[in-house]
Image (cartoon, rainbow, N blue to C red; front, side):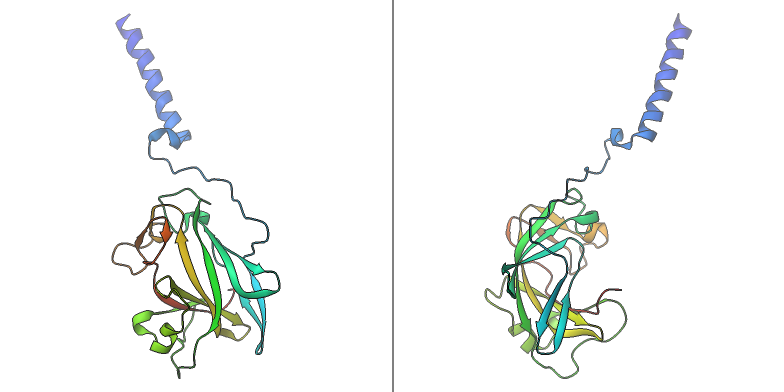
Length: 209
């Protein structure tokens, strides 16, 4: 009887290990399950803007969706940001809504050869490296419009784009999905409300890869 008891325990132990291997959620270290992606009607990831310099493209970016306040006016947009692919934080499930906000169209003042060159789609310029005229050109409230993302054409990035204001809808650590740590200027804590700690960057977008 004693041997049979231990034998049954051995069988149950093996089954338990198999269950953990097949269903890692049972281990207590599972990722939060993805939530359903909900994109409100009228929101788009890619926009084309008619300008005096021709057609400008804006987007797409992971998780970002935009909608004009008025269909014929692309100078002011509503914005939502989702945690697609858990790209921005590990604290919340995939596709969870992270931010709402708005984007205001603007053209950065000329500043000599300040626009960055180089390879790669996104070419960032942090505020402390940027011409003062660029930083000062952001709309009010300036402590909330702290991020600029350019449009692009076939030839590459242009100085026209959008100043974006982020408003958190949840509390989480913005760590680029665990890819950056506390020493990164991107890393910060988000709480519900205007995200005044959002990275202060002017990004020149070279266009789709």
